[in-house]
Image (cartoon, rainbow, N blue to C red; front, side, top):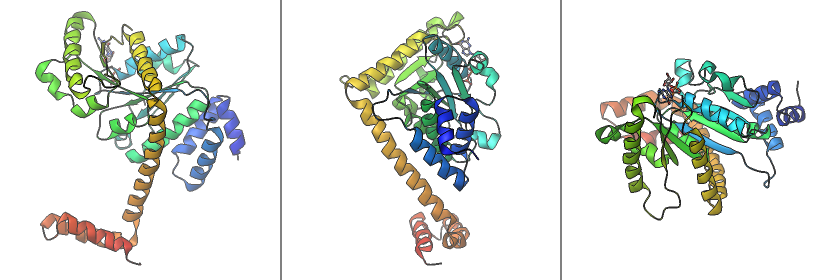
Amino acid sequence: MITVAELAEGVRADKRAVLARAITMVESRRPDHQALAQELLLEVTPPPDAPLATRVGITGVPGVGKSTTIEALGNHLISLGHKVAVLAVDPSSTRTGGSILGDKTRMGTLAVNPRAYIRPSPTSGTLGGVAKATRETIVLLEAAGFDVVLVETVGVGQSEVTVANMVDTFTFLTLARTGDQLQGIKKGVLELADVVAVNKADGDHVVEARVAARELSGALRLIHPRGSLWRPPVLTQSAVEGTGIPEFWEAVLRHRSTLQEAGEFDRRRRQQQVDWTWTMVRDAVLSRVEQSDGVRSVRAEVEAGVQDGSLTPALAAQRILDAFDAPS
Ligand code: GDP
């Protein structure tokens, strides 16, 4: 049995076998693994004055070019001397059995680069479980010396908000769409985005991409009025040709330094830790309620009552909470 001290030492030395084992431990739902994982996280958490890695979220619909962008960006970052980790948050992979990063061939050259580490989405069930494992994995990867962590997600349900809350800069990839087609972009994702890039700006699509970028810029100006600390830039790029990728990274760094200079960067990170704490409390309370004997015994009846209209949702919620409180 490997000790926490040995795990911590192996993680800090970026021994990949140990790192993989440590990540498996934070992903595990077994109580003994969970306890060890928490000890390990405390052990490897850097001192407050240690340099902070850059955490970047990347979202966009399937096919927009996230993997291709990560491959190009990752290689660019490695050429600048960085060590790059790539994670994914994809709760749907639990259901489909496939992950957006499951197929590493989509990031062929990055996957084999010793200065990169690619880990597919954990398949621990709920978004809450996946998010917890991902956040904890980020801590381990930073301890192993990865100074850039890219977190990929697809725009499914709450996963974008979840990822935006665990990174410093949230980026949104899109395609050249104009006018009416722009309406198809969820306003929510634009509100979360710190950097927007119109991908596939190559071949016949360069002009179209620039027009789309201008229109998106206009939409963003409505969300971030003049005087806002940061107004998200809209860039154009071609992940396959590698054009615009250095500019994409420069925009991320500009965002970071703007927040840092305003004292907003540290504040956000601290707030993320507090939010994360409460998210875990909420998840745990909900699961206790759902698992309790009292709630299990009334659940079917209460749900049926809501469905046939004999109970209002508010009354039903009260019945469930009463059943939870009642001594069993
Ligand atoms: P993801 O699903 O968002 O990860 O998208 P992928 O990175 O897998 O890309 C989907 C498809 O679009 C692939 O066939 C890529 O080769 C292609 N693609 C990605 N980026 C570009 C680009 O910048 N230009 C062009 N022309 N094709 C691209």
